[in-house]
Image (cartoon, rainbow, N blue to C red; front, top):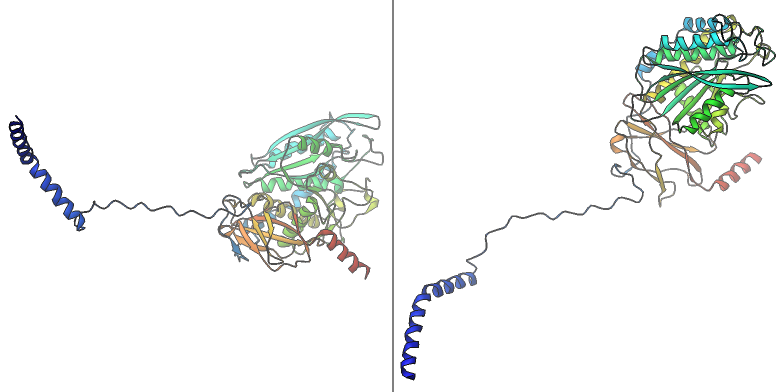
Length: 481
């Protein structure tokens, strides 16, 4: 039995060996080829491994370029030919006609007649509104801004005249140019006595109308508001009403320029006075420096004399209401006053020097055309002191509409801008500047430039450098010596 089983197994094993002989030989052959390196897997496509990028510097805004040190740029503040054309378009004849018409209303006292077109404040403000519409080239939107005035027992409805030239740029910034249109005789509430108010302040209202006529021929990045303010003579009531509402409405007011008595007279010095409170360390002081800088580019022979004060001692103007709510605001007026003409019927159109008046309006056109036409103010830079004393890293987002930037490191006690540093937009956003005095305190700000060299408004100044108390001590010692 065992032999029979053994024979059967041998026969079955032989059959199995015959059946798998080919597969076994093929496996042995493949194993040999693999051992000799003659058989490999087909090559696979190579997928590159991403190289990790270095993390941005702390505080570096998105969109900043590669770090550059002490860049040099050909994009600098320049006299823009189109702005020059607008400056040259200011007409003495137009200014004279405006002032004559305003004087012809007899009085523009806040408590004068409102129901007549030939006399009193009602006829005057309706004429101002209509004139804004007439000269606005279809671009200016005009409305009355109403409020009630109660003053020394008198009460009357008042109306600021607001003419808005909307900006076309991406920002929501507003530049306000204003002048009060009311007048007063000796008594501030007298609405019957003749009160001519040619220079104070027909000259300022004429500036508004002439500037609106000229600037409405173009489109601007920032919105421009021309405001004829009411009730300035009653302790700046009209400006207070407007400024407080603008503050509550979160209006993005970039600049407020108040023109009051700018007509000039024969023989006075060919310059203007600009009043800015806390000139060295305020947003109003920065606006005053900007005004002076642009004016110097376009009318260098008609200088701006900056005064470190809100106004003349014991006096006021409408800009003070904007300063009170933290907005940058300055007053511009003629170089010399004649107190015999103040609130007097002697203040007539015939005493104004219209050549002087023209230059004052040209200053305004140049300044507003730059502030409204250039790219909007950039985001204030992040500033880091470097290990090398007197060197600073500035980082900020680059505006696609900017061609370049001006950078100001103003010594804190300087009333004017120092020589700027410049950087092209394609190199901006991550800039190291060297060579500053490590013992000096600086107020740092930047502004955008367009391709034509128009310079925009500067960012709020940031203080860097030596501690302020050391700087103030140094100045005090120098003064004592």
